[in-house]
Length: 142
Image (cartoon, rainbow, N blue to C red; front, side, top):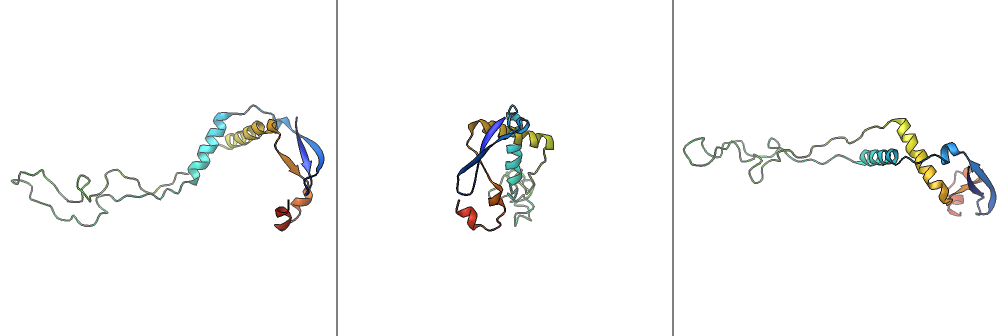
């Protein structure tokens, strides 16, 4: 059982509490934590990057030169990707990076992190008197 100190609003030691090994005593699963962190970071992405394809670049409605007889390679538009100021061939378009992970994996990741941090004993639990206040001032005075 993991033991934690319980303190009051003044930071005085009130008591000690033992917490369940089902939460704070499991073997940490690094893969589950990695999956949860990558999922969190992917869900934070905006996905607003954008580039213009040849259809979206202004201009280029006319063939630059005729098809045959000039010695140049055949071209259909000056906004094709191989031209300067042309469109981008396979550039990024706005999309969502969000995806979901299973609730059991999410829960395992949380329990793994709690179990990993518990032996360090750097936590202190507050008494409920602080939680009863809805005003910010008591929190700032801690």
